[in-house]
Image (cartoon, one colour):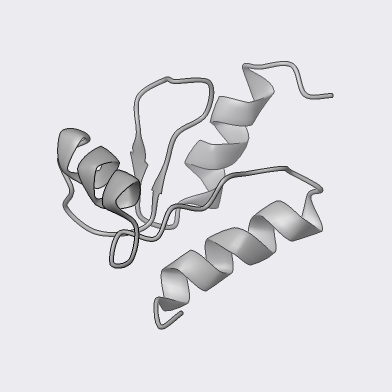
Length: 72
């Protein structure tokens, strides 16, 4: 995939052993619909436990959101 910030987000998840689901907004109808319903405005959009979406690559916000939830 061409998105550098998406790649950095995937790397962050891999380095921190975080499971995730990746929806491609260009090739997945569900991905496109979810993207539009969350206001679009850039990629990636990270959603943790159905909370407020995090737009763009933002490891600080991702870490804060994860610290407010239990992980297996």
